Image 1 (spheres, one colour):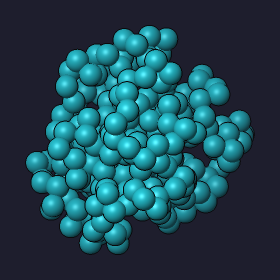
Image 2 (image 1 turned 90 degrees about the horizontal axis):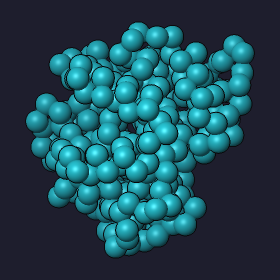
Image 3 (image 1 turned 180 degrees about the vertical axis):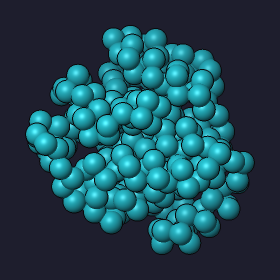
Image 4 (image 1 turned 30 degrees about the vertical axis):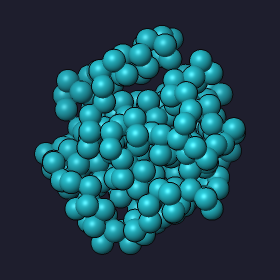
Length: 257
């Protein structure tokens, strides 16, 4: 979803220059799309066109090398045949938002689509859980559930602690690439937000894996609040000018969704 891509772009500046404040330039000239956006587009392509998941994900990532892929995932991209590697990294959650949008009329279908793309790499139970929790939250928001009900449902279904506020999380939060220490925090950033922009600022302000935390929070915030059209258009024009295939698959997903 566009929320994932915008979150990725905004957070990209702060992944290795982490901050603990919501007061920052939203669209920095140094911003760029990373592996989070590439993988989100790949998942949309897989689900829209019923493509082979592993080969399609590899194809997209090979088309966009040097976008910040993790070490194990980089090895997977070049492997033949590609096999899942028992990962519980937060990459499982940052890319799955298309499953919720494309299958917004059926939770069972959305979760099945989520499992289909996640098991290609992140087949550890915690990786599967992180991806499923993310899709569930977005799906409920797309159906009009409010933040309190989404928080309660995700906590009950997946056992995540969503009781803390962003201000309570921020002081002791640090860089972490696992689902266990990323997904609950990212969902909280969106569930506590007053707008899409506020959710992205929450996510970056934690001072963690900023692009991925924002890429997970972004689609949930989009489902809760929507994205201002001028913000989406700005991101497309200034950061995706050389990525017409990402823009094309995103537009098709929304046409179908």
